[in-house]
View 1: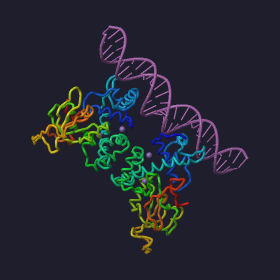
View 2: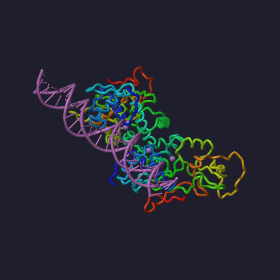
View 3: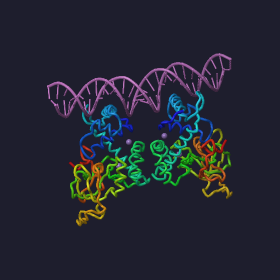
View 4: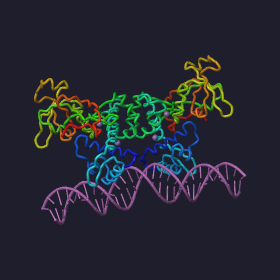
Length: 262
Length: 262
DNA sequence: CGTACTATTTCGGTATACCTAAAATTTATA
DNA sequence: TATAAATTTTAGGTATACCGAAATAGTACG
Ligand SMILES: [Mn+2]
Ligand SMILES: [Mn+2]
Ligand SMILES: [Mn+2]
Ligand SMILES: [Mn+2]
């Protein structure tokens, strides 16, 4: 309800609320928000009340938390900051993709708008970050690449890695050690029985759906078993969809473009 | 007396205490510290007590405040951060020298040690910032260039601008508009009567003390009148001393090398 | 449909870093 | 050297953002 003095805490709350619905639509609950922020549930209750006073979230007691238009706008601004910073750190300061998240988490609150825009210009206005996450433009427009989480894909599907969750640096290092990175092409071979690993095969980067020649040598060195955490952290673009997010005009009623899945 | 949780406030206090004695030796008082930090005197009293508890300052009630060895170490680390950041913003992100101070003031608290060192490496380990202030090395060694504030110099002295106080962006823009910048060569012509301006003459950058040919055309376009604020904000290296600070071994008992003046 | 279990909020408290006003101390001046 | 003026500290209070424990609301199921 009020004109808003924002703070780095508020920025983080709003960003986490947004992120929760970026790749699926169930809204976040108090407990989930507390877990992601590493604070007590009681702290979330208090802060959510404040966010509601400032008209950044909609919230009825005992129900999940949703961003208002203002909240979404702030969240997208923070997401833009975070992802541009990650991209900059990797491209200009020799950070590796598993190091950037924590650094960006702090810097996003400290840099000026001028800094952000100079950085974006220097990078050539990139549209995705080192983990494949799309970067909103300065007006808050964002376009999600039409991708599927690896656990949704059946055997035989082929695609290119469009996004890797950057939450766990360990996992990022593990994937890299096994030759998996953004844009790596994969084929799903199949699921090992009873919630086990998912078997995939790396495809040569030359592979494309238009060249349907699929060299199928069953047990070469390109096969890999991916554990549960990896499977839930990888998103693939299937068919020939190209990966760079292109900015769209804002859709009426929301700053976000419609997601694909579901 | 205690192992220390540091905070951005503490970092700023210690940095301001240090800065006060960087170009002269009288220690800072409570009121001066409050003025520079933009807080109430009472806030300083409280914070100084805390700094003393943490062994960052020496302080007896009603007397000035001095850094301990630990305090100096922290201050020099912050000064390094600040000045490297300013240098980076100017060289890599197209900031102008009057914009960088405020940005660095925030960033200095947010960046990691890794960030600082990557930045320093990328810049080739610079030893002075865009305003001529020396940058301490990673061990906290700093060397002040042997310079004199413009108001200490008599008519006839010649020298090169070694440092310009970066506190007032307005002044920086004004100096730049009049063609004065780091390393500009000047000759002091004289003081206008009764606390008025100081008249100086810009010398061609080709001028050097070894070439004592001093082309003296009295009233050309290179003459300038500098007001009080400008005179107090400019430091000159006289004679042929070169400007780049070279890192020295630490002197016993202090991390700082002896200053020249006084 | 009532009771146990869980999720969420409320309550009382803590730590940091500020503030204004009042008290204490130092310094300047008559 | 008293007294006035300026400086500095202390006292009392605010705002933010946390916490653990207690109270309350919602859900699950026997
Ligand atoms: Mn953050
Ligand atoms: Mn990322
Ligand atoms: Mn600062
Ligand atoms: Mn500077």
